[in-house]
Length: 334
Image (cartoon, rainbow, N blue to C red; front, top):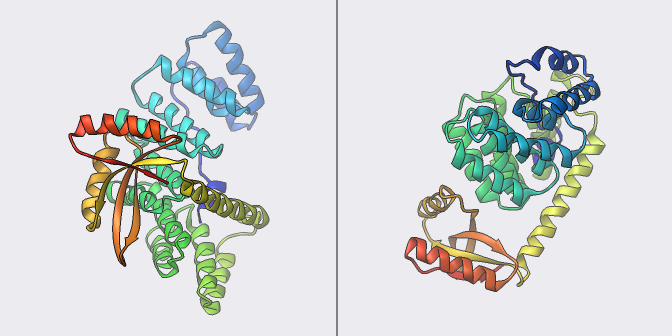
C-alpha cells in the first residue's frame, strides 16, 4: 500500500568525484551526519558558490526548510546536468514527505520538461504517481506507474510502480486487480526491496475479500522469508494508513466543495482518446487529471486541467487555454 511506500521510500546518497569526496564520504560511511553538516557549512564559508557543497548539504541537512533552501541554491547555480536534475528530484521528495503533493506534482512536471533524458526519470514518474494517488487521483496515478513499467521495465522503480498500481486498485476497492498487481511483483521482481510490502499487501487484500486461507498463506510466507523487524513498525504503519485514508477522504470532500474550480478540456466515451488528451496537456507542463464519471448510466472519462480557489481565476485561465489551443473549454466546480 502507499502508506508502506511512504514509510519505506528508498533514498540513496551518491557521491560525486570532487575535492569534497574524501572527507564527506568518511563522515557518511561512519554515519556522522552532524559532522558532515558542520564540515559542509564551514566549507561554504570559504566557497560560497560551490554547487556540490550546497547540493550535499541540502541532502543531509536535518531541518526541512534549510534543506530545501540549499537544494534551490544548488539548482540556481547549475541549470543543466544530472546533478541539477538530482537536486530537483530531492526537492520533489522534500515536498512529498511534507505532504505538499500539489507542489510535488508541479516539481515533477518541471523535471519532465527540463530533464527528459535524465537517469532519474523513472523515479520522478514513480514519485508523481504516488502524489496523484495520495491526492485521490487514482487514474492519473495509474498513468504514471504505467509509464514506469512501459518505458523503464529494467529500472528498480518498476517493482515499486507495480506496488503503486496495486495500491491504486486497493484504494478503489478493486481487490482482485490489486492482488493481480501485487502477485506480478512477487513473480517478476524476486530481489526487489518492495517484495516484503507486496506480501503484506497481498495478505490484506485477501482479508478484504474474506479469503482467510490465502491471507494466512502470504502472511506466513512473509514471516518465513524476511527476518523480524523489516515491518516491525506495524503500529506506526497502521497509523500512517489510517491518516492517509482520512486525508484522502478529506481531500475528496474538499474537491466536492463549490468553491473549487477546474477546467474541463474534454469528456470522452473512449478511454484511449481521453488518455491522449491528458498526455497532450501534461507534456506541455499543465497539471492535468483523468476522472471517470457516470452520466445516464454510461461511463465517461473527463480530462481536467488545474484547480482554482475562485471562479474568476478559473475563467481567466480558461481564456488563456482557449487562445493557445483554439478550442472551447468550460469551467466546472469541484
